Image (cartoon, rainbow, N blue to C red; front, side, top):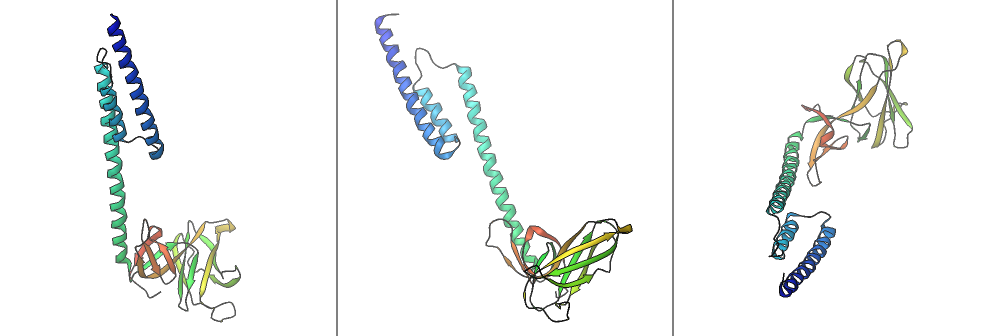
Length: 236
């Protein structure tokens, strides 16, 4: 190799190193701001590499092909993520629209807290086995006992009772937030799992939130995803 070729190769190598360093610095800054490298950043690095390769010692074509394959995979993953985001958005919007059909119907939903506004409230309980005794304990927002109702249906499954809004003394309680606690005894005094649910009429739907719709019921607001079932209105 002549001196002239040596100087030329040295200059090319120096230029390549500087360009690569600049490209690496730019990529590092972009990656830091975006957390992950996007397909635009990847393509920019690939083009920079091609511009600054040593013409006397070009990149291995096999390596170049592998880099193109990586770029193709990255683009496909990016497009897949975008499609999934669009699918989630479409699903949420569809769910919100279907929630409008609930207006005027009764819905049952999981939970123990409910709003009372001078109208009877339908309180439910689910038994995972046969029981010998079931009691629904109603408390006010301070945890003070208000009323105790005996459950008549003791078989496995979903059952409900009506609370007329009266306390243990037979007086009407004020409007507000209340809570129901289910206590159940199994056959032969063994335990049986019991959980509460509420049944109430839907009076409106709030679509302004992110995600699923919020149903406005006479017993309070409830997320559409917590609905157990919908039924013709019984007026509660």
